[in-house]
Figure (cartoon, rainbow, N blue to C red):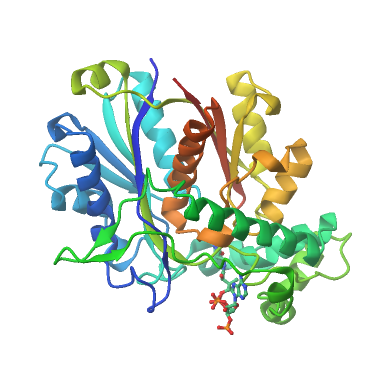
Length: 399
Ligand SMILES: CC(C)(COP(=O)(O)OP(=O)(O)OC[C@H]1O[C@@H](n2cnc3c(N)ncnc32)[C@H](O)[C@@H]1OP(=O)(O)O)[C@@H](O)C(=O)NCCC(=O)NCCS
């Protein structure tokens, strides 16, 4: 059985600070905005929706306790809809899509909504505590924060600050161009307040005027914590490294933002019943585990695994979305697998647009789908590095 994407929607990404346009909107409201949009855009008989799976990383406070079920109830889908929230760190939104696809492909479900949500302004990253840092045996001498891991990768493989900043400038230029030319409009659902007043209708984190000069003024973000606490742990583990070069900063790391994304995923029969045309099939999904201290090297083995299991090669992929958690992550994958940069993150990435942790995986897959349609191409692969040393990849093909 095949799993088809029938629709894909997302909120704009709001700056994840109290000044951001979505900071007054609860994560449940972000989610219901999209559930309502899926209902109205597709004239969806919600009685046929069986499950809602939503990635969410910081599951505390108003994002805790299975936000997907609360959103399902609040959007009037009906009591029959089951729902769950899951956490595979930054892969959560894509993991939700992959799980939905697997359930549809296996025949366990006919129609599922999957994606994710994260309000980083209201529920800050890390506020839920973490076994990585709170379990003494797991933490001591073994754990470093992701920014240190990113700097470690850059040091180990010789990526300079100029390499990273050049990539960041390109992300900003591509995102600005895509926004100006309305490439995101097919998927973006404006977020409104309770009076129907529009709070945000396009991504607000982009900085169009970013240049190598403006980035050159930014201080390394992880130098201080590295000097004080973590560099020695990294050096003790990677003995070939004498000193960590701290090359990531606010302008070449992913932005802290708020947002949500969802996809409507089902089999062929349900599409016929609902009168919906499939936009793409979900061909393959893969997850892998990798060394947890350097942590962010997962996209290479995850991409290889997804390609191998799909019987494909890098050359079969028309569009890559590689999450820009830190600039070194996509650079490393492109170099490892010899991927042409001109087909990677063609509309920018999380450096320019932001990375709403639990939503991003679904968002970038949706961006890839929109771009396949715009370019009239066929196959896309989305991949993310994942906290704790993991990687995820998903391949879609247009029908
Ligand atoms: C890197 C990081 C710590 C920076 O956070 P921050 O200091 O709150 O970032 P800000 O947005 O306030 O930017 C800091 C400064 O850089 C400036 N800046 C940011 N992007 C810029 C750009 N593209 N061009 C010029 N200046 C820029 C800001 O204006 C700000 O300047 P100010 O201090 O004079 O106001 C944060 O973005 C981060 O942690 N990112 C990674 C998130 C993460 O780990 N996600 C999971 C990864 S898998």
